[in-house]
Image (cartoon, rainbow, N blue to C red; front, side, top):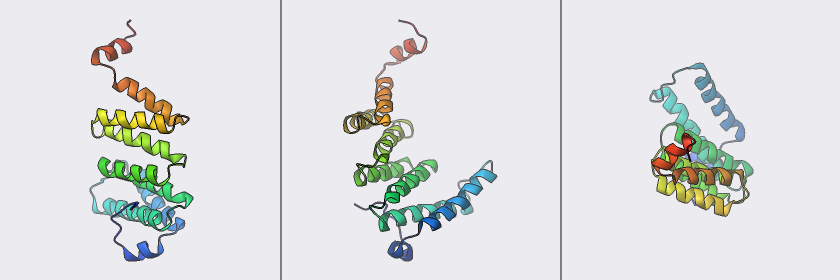
Length: 170
């Protein structure tokens, strides 16, 4: 399984970044987000920082697969991809987390995020319901399973049922 694909910087891929390198890049980007009220995601500076973080997350996860932080780096990478509007790529990254770290507590969260992205960003409620149902089946004890089942319930309501429910009418 290729955890992240797309890493082209040979030095990063060979040696892999340290956790400190990743944290420094996160700090720089976080400061930008906190200081600028209206971050222009299309600007060259922001795009360069985002791409650097995406490369660092991917390189760390690829180099340190199995490390307890590798899955967390993939989750952060997926969040960043989702934040910049690339839901399909974020979903692929969350799938990598679920497949690569199925016993890790972050796997049910990654699965929920797959369903949520399918539901909200892609408008694919059928696939979202499948993912939510699978989450509840595979991770029934997870707090995410409860949220997934609740999502399935709401997604399966007809418009009439939803309106009745919201107005508290029988």
